[in-house]
Length: 61
Figure 1 (cartoon, helix red, strand yellow):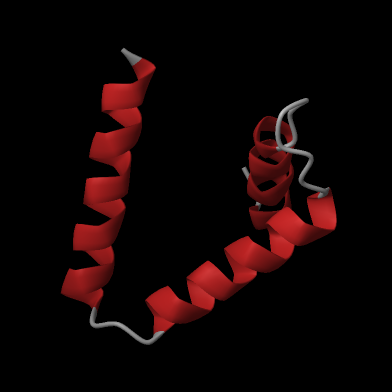
Figure 2: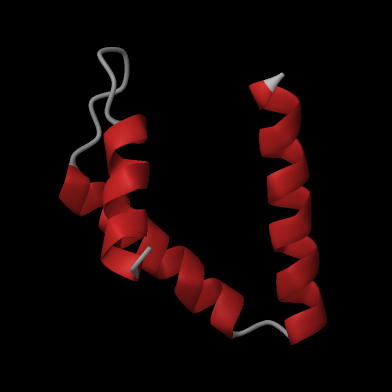
């Protein structure tokens, strides 16, 4: 999966009937999120990602 594929997959799931979020907005927010992660130490980045994945796993149940 490329970064663009990732952005598009997220945008597709984020844009719902209840929350109309465009692809451009989703890509901008993700780009800013990566910029924030870039400023953190690697251990903190991995911790944030691990917590996000754990939250996603709970929601998927």
